[in-house]
Image (cartoon, rainbow, N blue to C red; front, top):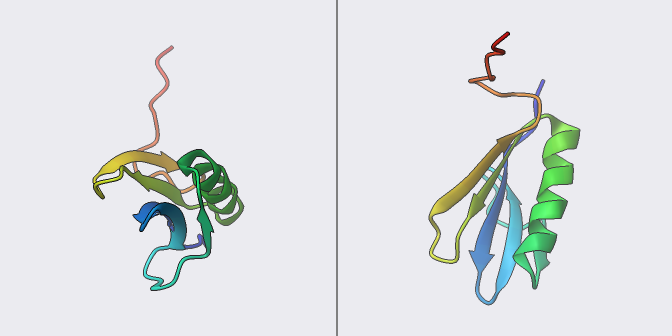
Length: 76
C-alpha cells in the first residue's frame, strides 16, 4: 500500500509540505529547498509522489518514489 502524495506549496511567505487531501501543513519552511528535502523523505518512506509548485501555485515538479504509473522503459 502506498501513502499520500506529498505537496510542496507556497504558504504566505513560507513553503508548506502537505499530504494530499490534508487541510493543514505537515511542516512549514522558510526555504523551498528545505521543504522539498523534507517532502522527498516522506514520499520515499510512503512510496508515493512528491509534487512541487512554484510561487504562483503552478506544478513545476513531479517525482515518484515507488508508485510510478508510467515507469521508464529501458532501451538496451
